[in-house]
Length: 236
Length: 249
Image 1 (cartoon, rainbow over the protein chains, first blue to last red):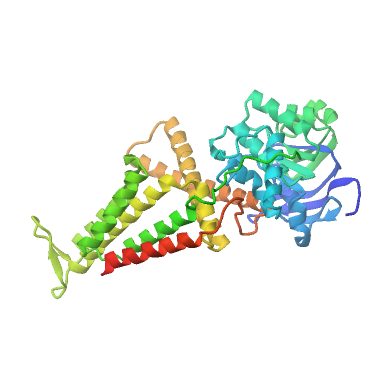
Image 2: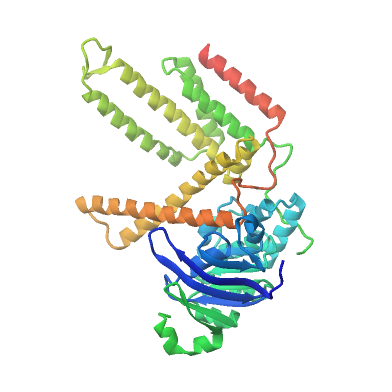
């Protein structure tokens, strides 16, 4: 892998949905190794669409490099193992019958042997503070716990990059605090799409503001969030 | 990563596998499907097995509500038989106490539909009472079915829960704004059905993304499952032969 110092490099990415809606227009994004970047913008700005591109789930026009490699059909499965995607609604993400199976899913697909899968699941669940819930059905957990299971389910394959869509949505204050502490403790590169500006302040030193599928501004979070007039003009 | 291992949903090697129970259910459903409803003994045997299964699995009585859609469909079929024109050379059967004549073939079809479907729904309900979603996935995998078929079956069952959840949300949202009455209730129900389809479509799309994002390639992979064992296959074979003998001979 070419070492560019960047984990994610997106250039001139454009995407149009089949109904003609332009979701992304010449978007650029550069996330350094171990960096924490926030994607902020109003509803419909294109945050979620951009996140789906980082995992190769949607393919637009333009260039996406993950860990120095151009995202292509040939390396998609390898790169997907490096980019963990956590969806906004855990109910969309959790589909296996037990927490163990849910967390093990990506590891089994990566063809680790059973003992290695067990070890990885134990470690991932311990990281998110969900040890002891292995045989529970994911739908029987609280929203905060389900979010944790979602994060464990992508940590299990040692993702270098973690992409989270609205991680704090719907959480109570304690759950939100726990989640922020958990994310702060991770070594992975983090890309977080959110409306939660307080979470952005606490976790992400850099931010990108999106509006109507375009990058409006990129820069230090403190600077961007300190400009109230600019935020208001962006619908934030 | 620590060196510990997770407490996982294991399957004891000596216990009966979920694959066997699913196989047994398949044998019973096959028997119910081919039984001639005119043979009282065969229907009696299958009804007896069904009642025993319901008792052994301690199926709550309220689960019998699952028969309601079947019965309403059967009533609809019966009403169709009442209005169907009867040719003079057509074999008919006379309804007791009423005098109304119904086509013989159609009446047999309706009787078969009611009896067979009732038995199959009750058997499936009884087995579902003791088989978890994980058992379903491990069991289907253990039967050696094609992975895509296993995924499809499991995700359909999972989808039913999503469907029920979405319906609950929509009904709550409707009731919160005052339950509509009369013709408006029908209009609202139609709008809800439309919204339900849209929501389920979106949800299915996101779930497909979630599957692919974690390396899904047509197989819902799990740990700790095993293929159905030779003694279990032999036992299923014996069940099949005995049932065939009891029903067909």
